[in-house]
Length: 378
Image (cartoon, rainbow, N blue to C red):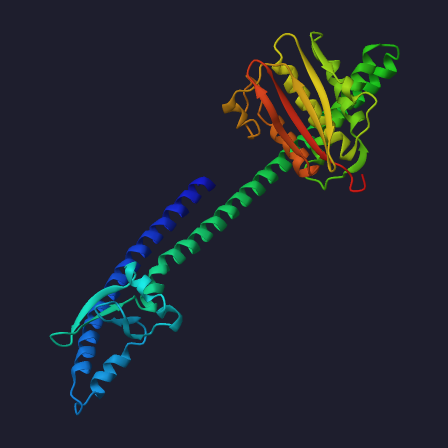
């Protein structure tokens, strides 16, 4: 069962619990409100009997009923709305009672017919218990929302952790699998060097074998503690440009003139960063179908150095832009869809920087931006 499906099930269960809780609490609140209304009717009649009682009448029974109301706020007003008496009401609220009554905040009124000429009116509000009960569903919803948020965060964290382990395992297994053929190729290259010392192709073979070894070393570094050093970014870029320039079509111009004579010291791991730049350059070369240009621009602020790589290729449509960093997604006929996701991880997780698609327009071109941190003393 996938994490997304588990999350959906948890969300449905949580919403079901909230719905049942709200229905139950609202029914309970309505029942309590009806009970309080009945009690207030009894209380009002008791108040009337107390007012009209003779001087020699035993009022202890009436007083006991009146005093049992310790939670429901009550006002007794005359026909003009003047407050004659109150119970369970703070003094500071009495001055504003006319406003409160006019806004229908209170229930009532219950008429108290004292005599033919006098009528009083009783208004009451919900008890503290009923008021708190009305807020219970909201509190429950907040708690369940927090629970869902924590569950989602835990699932996403677990998913990212699982993906990281997969990346690390794949990288190290790739490096391990490359190790055996590279060793064999090194042995064959040494034999060929001894047998054909003047052959012009043997040194080229040596360079390609060294390239394979460097690739294996890069994969081996994935998952290891990042070894960042203060170094000039420009030579790393120039090495990557030289490598791709020798392998790109003669109709494609790689313009790095803006980097000439420039020095930008950042925190970097040279082999991994060079691989990222080569990967972005290869994508740019693939995006240029016939003739075009790849241009480098460099910017900086107080804390970061930004390297922009712009091509005049076919561009990326809006739908694809949202998915280019997803593992396994590719718009090419061939490929695993791992280059850009891995490059993003190298920049963001190992260098503490950013790799982002700055701009792309179909038929115009694409710009990727690498953001790297300057040394703290830089």
